[in-house]
Length: 137
Image (cartoon, rainbow, N blue to C red):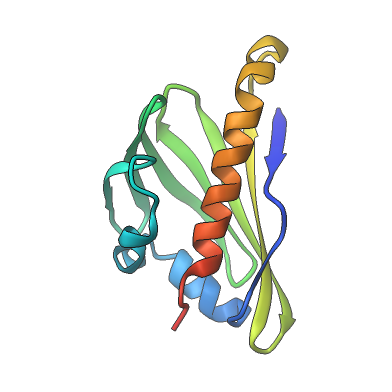
């Protein structure tokens, strides 16, 4: 399995606040407007699943499969042209600041990996930027 990691983002909110907001996907309603236009469409979610259309990949549904309180949220694809796992790691820096990193784990042959690694990396960095800009209040 290949792993693709975002760079680390510093978030000016506590580890607990960030985890509590991201571990319940229904909280994403408040950040829908921060997603760059044209990148993600038709977003819907409930507490455990997130579905969106991401051209050219098509419709993707992610489901939370594990919550490790305040530290990590793990997802797997339920629907995707390329199955993958995604996890969000959160570590404390201080009482009111934490660091976040996103990781994708994907089984892909080396030829395809060469073609999609950069777009996946770019998408992961944009996702990390968006999550770092959320007001976790």
